[in-house]
Amino acid sequence: MIAGMHTTQDDFYVRNHGNVPVIDETLHRISVSGQVSRPISLSLNDLKSRFERVSVSAVMQCAGNRRADLFSVKPVSGDPWAPGAIGNAVWTGVRLKDVLESAGIMCVGETHVVFAACDDCEAEGKRFRYGVSIPASKALSGDVLLAYEMNGEVLSPEHGYPLRVVVPGYAGVRSPKWLASIEVRDKPSDNHMQQREYKLFPASVDEASADWENGTTINDMPLNSAICEPNDGATLCAGPVRVAGYAVATGTSVARVEVSSDDGVTWTQAALNVEPSTPWSWTLWTVELALPEGTHELSVRAWDSAGQTQVSQVADVWNFKGYLSTAWHRITVTAQ
Image (cartoon, rainbow, N blue to C red; front, side):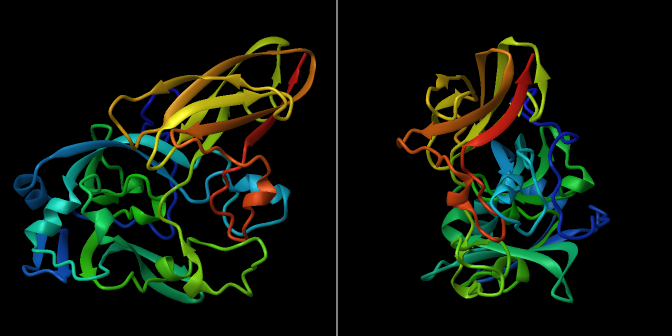
């Protein structure tokens, strides 16, 4: 996953809430409606011919990334992701801003951009098309794309062919694949995925007591880091050991990454590999530790340019849905 700055489509994580639809791009059209003065319907060829082609290097990350760590406190719902529900790619397409302005977007008061996709989902005994929304202020930022390529290749069906939304800095749930329509309106999407999923609650709240209307909607992803090499549970040769992983920061930048082999008593600063002029990309890091024979718990934490860092204990970020697992990432290895 961290073999290079950009994750290949084959190595990129896949998270779907329904089926992978079969779409004929020659027939597929995207509608733009709602609070716009000129509703439009666009084919993929229209998008490519009428709007500027742009590329953005950005992380895509599931809000449930590292959810498996939270199980050490008590069970949570959702897939038990290790640190692999993340990837970094160069996304190519057109700016959502340009498409919305072409349709004559009208922002009056609180405005949201609602996306509907082609995939069928099921929850609470009902079937529905996937749908989410983002604030219009984010949609008009210039970095949000309607993407048709990933690392210079046409999107595969699993990654959203023929067209997906890419919202840099936001949780992956806000970047729907297989885009069907865009609507500008004065409130967020009514879809189950917006109203009953991807909301954050305190540790004292469980599913039975959750007030979904007042839960915190997960948009921006917080500072996080993880160890990818060596694997958790690995047996290594005692002596110098290379440790490597990633760190991500939203709205700021990763200032430093530190790794400890003694539960945070001492820390070794890692070397950073940063993609220049790309605020939405991840930071890869490496460090060499001298490990004597025995069992060792390795921990990593990142600091951002605002001076913030990660909490040490996973219990401090526990929530019943298993979102935003951002405590120090820890693995155990044996040196012999």
